[in-house]
Image (cartoon, rainbow, N blue to C red; front, side):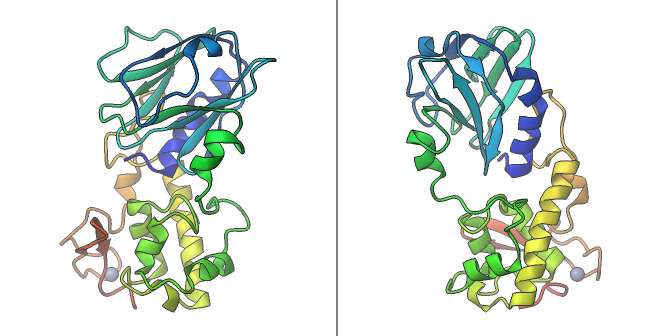
Length: 275
Ligand SMILES: [Zn+2]
């Protein structure tokens, strides 16, 4: 599943190239998670603005003097976006093309949990509704120990599940939550409300650090993620615990354990990570 770093890598791979382009045509394939919400013809002639990201959503302003708005895109479970000067004829899994005078932005999504949705603004209409429950951006300077500690307080669930919920901070998906908890030395089963302030500060720093590292590496390749130029990421090479069940911890050589929390695999070192 594409996570925040992969989505950000995707954004960076086409944002500069598409900004200022004029839409020539929008083509829909099979239905995605939600309907587009606008007639594709309405987008013709519109100008594409600067692509931004919020959580795992991308926002692409697509406006005409008469029609203000944009497209909110989500890669779902298996989606990828490619921007190319000339796209081949759409394949069976290519479900959205935004053809512009600078190239074609194409959503390839075999499982079709992805989405392209029209909204009159990022803070209005459909986008505002979809983004309403999202926590703080991990690279927002306001995301720090006190913010995380306040968010976790009063929650009786395991700290890992509280991170995964995404309503305190976005971006700590399964891989990154496992890795951040390892770096902070915190047992993923610890009850969220029992995390001390100093440990919350370490965890906030670890979340930011692991996401920054993944971004630098071009996103993870744990699935078959590729950015809009088809370049695979390399974060999996650096994972300390994720996907390493039974293998020795790089720090203490204790075998990494795998447990299931909320129907997702959690990997951790029973020696380095404390309750
Ligand atoms: Zn260890």
